[in-house]
Structures are given as C-alpha cells and as structure tokens.
Image (tube, rainbow, N blue to C red; front, side, top):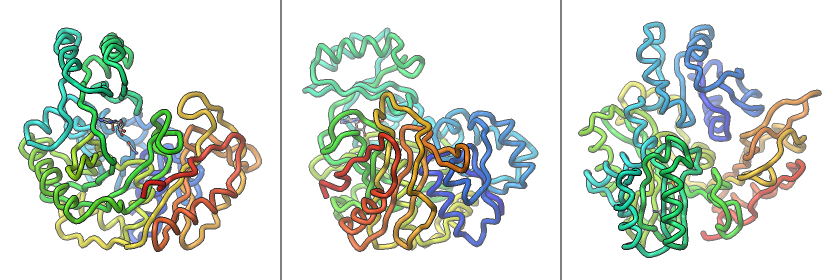
Length: 425
Ligand code: AMP
Ligand code: GLY
C-alpha cells in the first residue's frame, strides 16, 4: 500500500522511518516532509491546509492510507474532508474528525469534559470578557504561581505561568483582549500542578484502546528545566517514575473514563490521543489532551515498538485494535534535539549542516525536523527545531550517551542542544 504522511517534523520522520520497514508499505509520500523523509519517500511542497491539493496527490499516487502528524489539519477538518469526498471513500485516514479534535483545540471543552467524567485534573475556571470578574475572584483564591491558558490552538505559546497575582490579572486582561487572537477569546485559569510531567499515548478506535509506552519530554529551552517553553528539547522512554501502581491509576482513573467519555459525547474519536500528565505526589492528573503523537515523544516511543506499525494503523482504521498484541522493546530510548540558536524566539535559518550523512548504526537514528535541501546537495537548517538523535540502549544512561556522542559530530552555525536530557532520572 502507498502511504502519505502529513507534516514535516522529526515526529513525521520517525513515522516514515518505521513505516519504511513495513512489508505492507510500498511507497511513502509526505506533505511537506523534510530532507530526512525525502531520503526514503517523495515529498511535496504543499500546505497541510490545502485539502484539495492533498486530495489530488492521494488520487494521483494511489495512496491507500494517510497519517496526519500535526494538530492543525485535524482541527481544520482534514478527516471530515476525506469522509465527505466520494473519490476518497476507500482511503484510510488516521486521526480524529474536527469533532474529536476539540479535545485539543478547546482547552475549555477539555476541562469541562474532565470535570463531567471525574478525571483528575487541576482545578480551573474558563472565562470570557463578560465573566472576567469571576476569573479575578478565582485568582484571588489561588496560591502562586498562576496558570493562564488560551482556549484555542496557539502553536504551543498560549500557556502563561505567572508569579504574581497582579501580573496574572493584567495578563488575563491582555489575553481576553486578543493577545492570541481568536484563540484567547476564552481563557482557562488553572491551579498550578507541581510534579513530574509525563506523556501517555493511547490509540483509540470505535471498539477499544491500546496504551503505548510512556515517555517524558523536556520542554524548557534551558538546562535544569529553566527558561522558555519549547516544542520539546529531548525525550526518554520508558519513564522510571511510573511505578506499576501509578500505571494502574493512569489506566483506571484517566484512560478508561476518557475513552468512556468520548463514547458518551459521541466524539467519534479514532486516532492517537496524547494525554499530558503530571504526577502530583503519586496522583496522576491530566494537564492536557492532544489528538496526535507528541514531538519529540514519538521519536522515543516509535523506535520501541517492535510490531509492524502498519499492522497497528490498519487495525486502528478497521476498528480491530483489540486484536493487536503490542510487542515493546524493553530497551531504553533517548532523543536529543538540536535547535537553531535563539529558538524559541528569534533564530536564523539556511545554515549549512554537516555530519548527518544517513549512515545509521543499529542503535542510533537521526530524525530530521527543520531541514531543507540547498544548492549542491547541501543540507540547510529550516526551522527552530532542526533534527534529533535517538538511540536505544540497555538503560537510559547508555541510550543518552549514544545520542550525545552521535550529536557531537552534527555541526551547524549556532547549533544549540540541552546537555542535561534525562538529568532527573
Ligand atoms: P499545555 O499546553 O497545557 O501542555 O501546557 C504547556 C506546559 O505548561 C505544560 O507542559 C506544563 O509544563 C505547563 N503547565 C500547563 N498547565 C499547568 C498547570 N496547571 N500547572 C503547572 N504547569 C502547567
Ligand atoms: N512534546 C509536546 C507536544 O508535542 O505537544
């Protein structure tokens, strides 16, 4: 079968790399892809929002399955579009419809959902301009720091964590005043959760669910988790803090009620649900839902799956997930991200990258994120997050050591990495 991947990050490269090993996949395609994906498939410079052009590619290249990496096309209704086009009737597409994507695209909806189904999460209130006084009153009853979140998608920038109540109040006014455009017309104010964050991925079809290995990502730009939030600077899997007891709590108190709630609300969710969790003194609580794989979590979770990934996606599309026997590599995986200096604020692109010839060793893999092909086959940087190095090892120490060693030979002007991924393990 021919497979099309939507997206162009390291998550999508990890998906492509794994699917490239499947005997069921004939040719791989990506929109827009990146230089790494282009080494194993054909990439098209098309916007992930241009569904009509995507449809033309699907028909022209006889694509049997489409896998959607990022949240934006899902929120924009790519799955609904495929379902409404008779010429695409036979094409499988992995991801929820717009209705299901609301678990990520509206934080206010997600919080109301968690409340209704008794899913442990931070106390919160959702406010608009009209109800701002209730927001102020809520803030007065909280201890610092204060957490404010734009309701809608804001490219990972919509969460503010503030130390002072006065600052939180003025931030609330700014957000409701349009700081994030439409996304912050409603703002969720939350209790601050103090604990270790971890990521749980659940595949959900219309009959059952399947929990993938846990991962932990390192979101801040600076070492020891300091500085601004980024898309993610590295990740590890498994997560040693998750004891069998916490694991059970996550499944019983969070995954099962979430899956039930999805059914009750008729969200028709079929795809990957990413549950962002915080472990607060042994009690896992939901920080957020996303409706896709995490990036860079995918870069450590996918390499640990021994199954043919296509078998899993086909089962998801056919509602036969319950027949899948997951086969997980017990080894540890660690990934370290190289970013352009200045990220996540201002950075330059177009820098020449050396030392990434695709000579993959058995245990170490490079996944491209923001890369592009320049003149004379020179690979250039093309984004904030540039590429990530994932390694497998007998423990986290060995996996990290392998990734850092390989990363040392990757060079570009103003390259930055966090040197302390896994420091807290
Ligand atoms: P979110 O987009 O909801 O995942 O938020 C992005 C990041 O903000 C999370 O990964 C956390 O580091 C932080 N964050 C979000 N909500 C809270 C909270 N209630 N308490 C503490 N930190 C939070
Ligand atoms: N790593 C967090 C995310 O993908 O949103």
